[in-house]
Image (cartoon, rainbow, N blue to C red; front, side, top):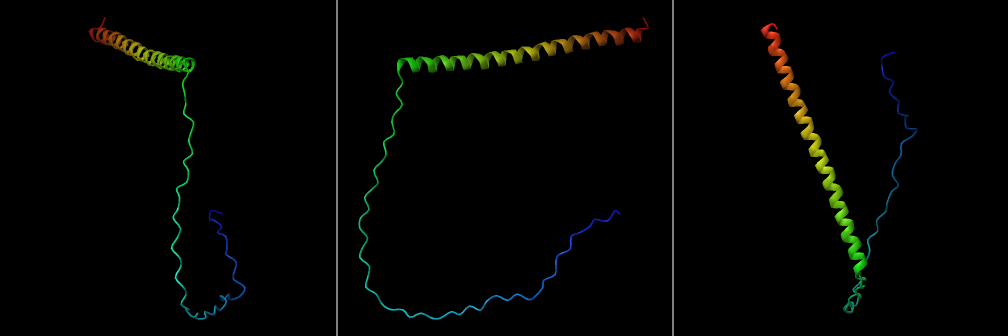
Length: 108
């Protein structure tokens, strides 16, 4: 019940031999020398259109960049405020707990 069942491999039905390959020697005949290759002309370089900024698109790009900077700054400032508020609240809880423990030891 707890033993794994391993699959069994099927037994081969017969012996498989590779086909016989006959290699016949070839004769080498001298040939005439090949003519030198023709000079290769360089391919024409495709000219890519340059991006031209109009005053309106430059203004939109600057406004978009400014908006991104403002959003990222607001997120970072809010995270900093969250950490600061958490730190102050943990410090206040520590002071209150310390006062309670000291009162318990004095027997009040």
